[in-house]
Length: 168
Image 1 (cartoon, rainbow, N blue to C red):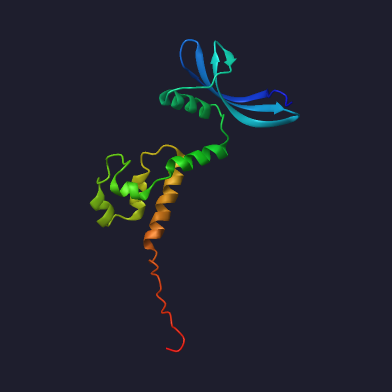
Image 2: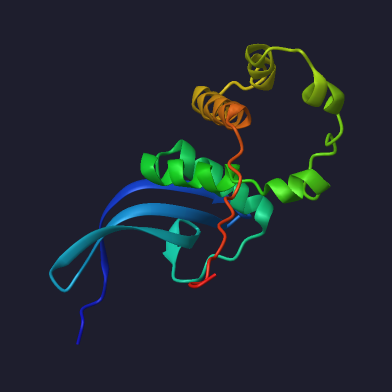
């Protein structure tokens, strides 16, 4: 029979106070069982400072607060944060064109964007002028310049091949 899993070391913790007695937690711990150890996340609820073996069930607003605290306290490794950023930045161009999920500014500056003589450098600067996070700023600029390069590339048209039958 496998031995009970134990927490060997608590490496980082994100905490959110749920009410007077309970707190939600995301912990990055070193766990062990059956002679093996591994690092993993535990989502849990503590009652009056003691670990409570109850599933953590919280609303989205409290989850955001808890997640923010966990990020601040280093619960997630940088590789995980980079992957989460990529997921959050992923966009569906079709939905953007038709305006679903847009921020209400779909048509704002559309003429300038489509017909403007504004240089790409100026548009890039305007795009990131209010972005404080250097990593996000860098990512946005990389995407902008990749999109600009795509616009300037010629469109490849499909070649049509005639199928010739023997004897004709």
